[in-house]
Image 1 (cartoon, rainbow, N blue to C red):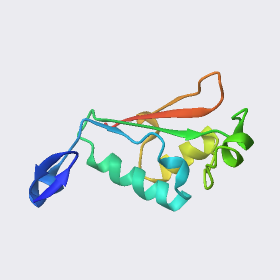
Image 2: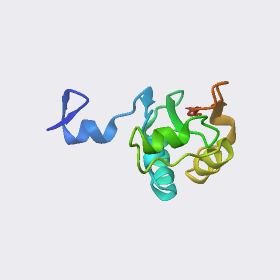
Image 3: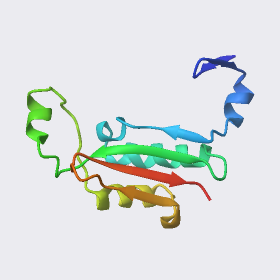
Image 4: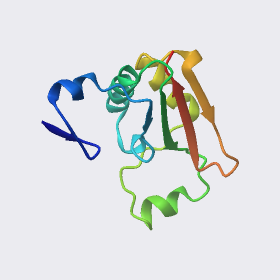
Length: 117
């Protein structure tokens, strides 16, 4: 048996787990490119058809990026443009028609949605 999101699952159940929604906000900006590609590919494959993956990545246009990196002590944050994130998603096997990119006016985070076909 294994614990998964507060539920007791058998290994078989965990391997067959196909979520409808995965929220990975606040994670991707701490991963290098290879880790992002690997994670995105695995999460995408886990989703059931019609399932949604949502995540964010800090943008290089963040108006207070230096303050967040130095004063708030967020070392290791990897800001990425929407083109960089899209390139990583495509490299992970996510198809272009599955991708939605939202760029709020505050320019802090890009919000990325994937609906598995």
